[in-house]
Amino acid sequence: MSAVPNRIDPTTTNNETNKHKVPIPEQSNQAQPVRRQLSVDAWAVILSLALAGLVRFGVLKHISW
Amino acid sequence: MASSSVLTRVEPLQLPKKLFALVPGVALLVIVGLSGKVLEKSIAAYTKAHHLVVPNIEYVLWAILIGLIISNTVGVAEVFKPGVATYEFWLKSGIVLLGARFLLADVLKLGAVSLVLVLIELALSIAFMTFLGRVFKLSPKLTTLLAVGSSICGVSAIIATKGAIEAEDEDASFAIAAILALGALALFTFPPIGHALHMSDRLYGLWAGTGVDNTAEAVAAGALYSDAAAKIAVLAKTTRNAMIGFVVLGYAIYWAVRDGRQVVGSKAAFLWQKFPKFVLGFLLISSLASLHVFTPDQTASLGNLSKWAFLLTFAGVGLRISFREMKKQGLRPFIVGALGEVVIAAITLGLVLGASKLVQI
Image (cartoon, rainbow over all chains, first blue to last red; front, top):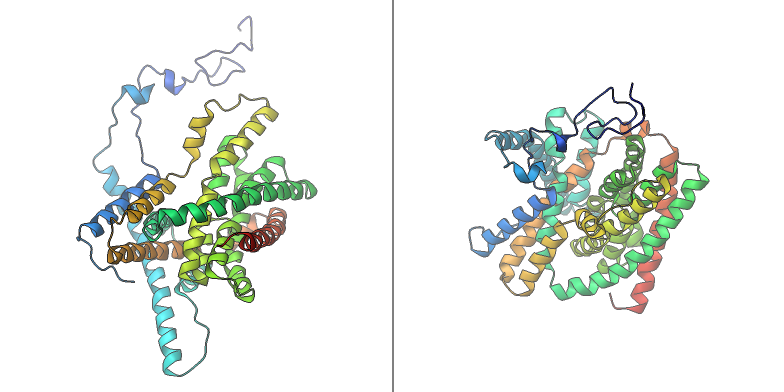
């Protein structure tokens, strides 16, 4: 047992004891690929601008309701 | 940071697979939405042919009712759920496209009126919901979530606040269920009240946009009145949504201080992170329309595309209302939410009617 039982070990996520050493993702040696996903808002804006472009340049004509 | 040192690798099949998973649910939205439209036209044609005087029930209500019947009888099967959840995407796309129907000057004028009303509504509704939460002895974090949900923009605000104040999942579920149930009730109560008070489209739209919590329900409540009311409801609700960052930031700081945690780092970054970016798309399309980039015919086409997107949204609103799930959440948060909503609806109605006396709306 450590002399200072409640000392925080930076490589663990559990700061009560050092028994369960779980590497913090950002500190892992093997960097994980991070997938950057567009938000729903971004997709909505992209779709709307694309549709506005298609309407503006005559690809989509007379959309009826 | 890992994200800056490693290039993004996306497996080639992932996106098509994801899109494929959405197909059944989106198809269900289309079928429900179109059924609503067909029902409206068929009933109108039948009553006209038989000289019957029956009030016209709009496709919006039919689409919601059909969705509601499906979700509460046979239920929505798992295979449809990812696609049905895209209703939020269609809602935001519809709002951005609707920007073409607004001149920027209108947006600024009505937006400024909406902003003043929204600021008063925010202060009053947060104070009242906090008071009700204390009276009914709800947990402080559940009270916060209900206050945010009823004052700003329903489910999105609750989810954003949940993360910022580290609330329990259970509290968030309670608050979301209450807000959704009350949003559904607003669909059936706001239009008759508006008609009873002989409200103009603009006044009613402003009331629906400031009084109904969730964006989809606010747009639907507006569309149930008239197309013009829906337009104004969208604008008022969008103004309200834009406030989300400030309120969530305020609560995040309050709870961080109360829990003895570190206060939020960069406040500007936090505000930007919480800001609903589709509002920028709406303003961009509105600016293009103001610069006469679109001909009148093209503007009408964009407005109709927006209506098609809203049709899928309204179908989604009905399909996600589950009375069984609401029952599970218990009565107390619902009573608090209901009491709060009635008072907030009355306050916003008073504000809108008062504002109409002061400025021309």
